[in-house]
Image (cartoon, rainbow, N blue to C red; front, side):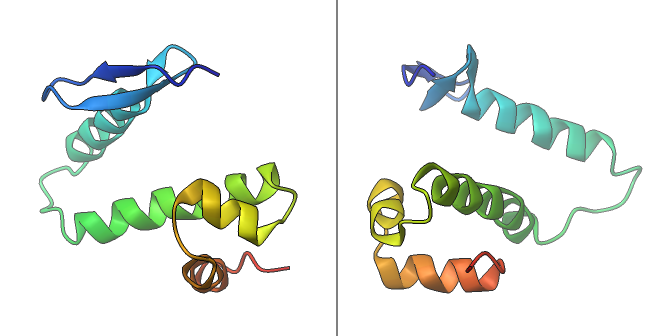
Length: 94
């Protein structure tokens, strides 16, 4: 998997994965979300996005590390206590 940085439409850099920058995929998902609101007002979008992104992020990193929380916390750039709190919140503790 490539980790090269690229610029998104706002000029910010983002990480490329499998020839699709993560920021571009995020922009596409959000554009689709807004297009499918059918006249409804969006609400609590930040919380919605964080819930949708954090769970698979933690799940994938924990799988990558074979369940090693210290290594996962290091990869994520957070402390182990924060990781455990998030794992409990998403029911990902073994």
